[in-house]
Length: 125
Image (cartoon, rainbow, N blue to C red; front, top):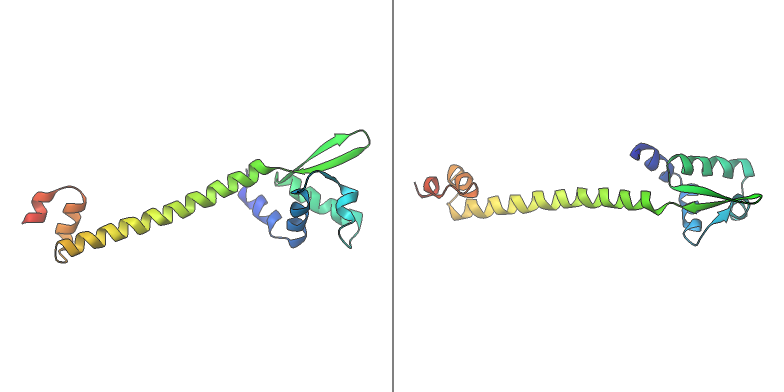
């Protein structure tokens, strides 16, 4: 998945509204177009951008094309955001632990580093 294409597609409020409509289930381009005051060509353009970003896919039934939300891409984005947040949280926990070690050694940076690395011999010196 290319995050750049996905974020570009999500940056437009019309495309986000189309995704909101598709949360309820598959819709044809005509059904989607009824919800907006714009031409069919404009709706098709937005659908094309959403398809290129893999946020929607189309399913053909007889003479109709139905658009559906591709939840796997959205789940992948959520996992990526979650991992970013976890990294930030882990960094904050490491800083808190280092601060605790500094307090325990009276502010001695070398002793705090040694203690954090499990080398208590240097922390006692």
